[in-house]
Amino acid sequence: PSGKAGSLLPNFDIRIGRLAIARLDLLAPVTGTARSGRVVGGDVFVSAGGAFNTHNGTAFEAVRGVDMAGNTELTLRAARITAGTDVTLSATGDVTLAPEMSEADTPIAGGMRTDKRFARTDITAGGSFAATASNGLLTLDGAQVAANGGGLALQGLNVVLLARKDLTEETTVTGGWTRKPTTETPVGVRLWAEGAVSLLAHGRGTDEGELF
Image (cartoon, rainbow, N blue to C red; front, top):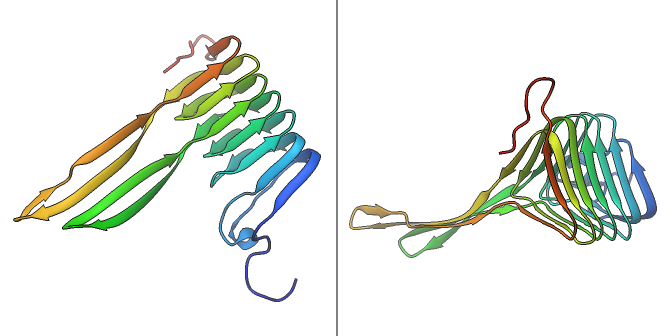
């Protein structure tokens, strides 16, 4: 330690042939703000004994495959995953591919423009893609997934596909009247595969699973 106040790892990359992480927390005392880094390797393998969560657009790049597992749950927020071969995500509990929202206000003549944008999780596999929540809910919230060299398989007790809307709102006041014209751009889940696409909501016991 240098004794100088500030983040310990302001900028960093991890480059390795194969990477296995039992637990990785990148909180504000480490990087200055709560975030995670960029992992690059031939194969990327990340496993957590408990929950595995990413934030702030974590990027994972692999020449070959990416394998991520969380014992209790796996949540990727605005993550970017690129692999030369297969991508596999799994957890005993819930698996969630979620967006992160940013909001910006810009002054305009007579008022204010508010822009709300969702950074979505984006996964590109050179081979196949599989996401399994063996005893939980599998949720793709506006996620964009492509399996360019194989099939695509989604499995959970229930499987949920959600859409988000990017929003622009202009608030102006003229002659005592307030106007709020709004522009919305919906972006739903996008699934693309070179091979077969399988969605399985297997339920528990006598309870049937649901796809919604």
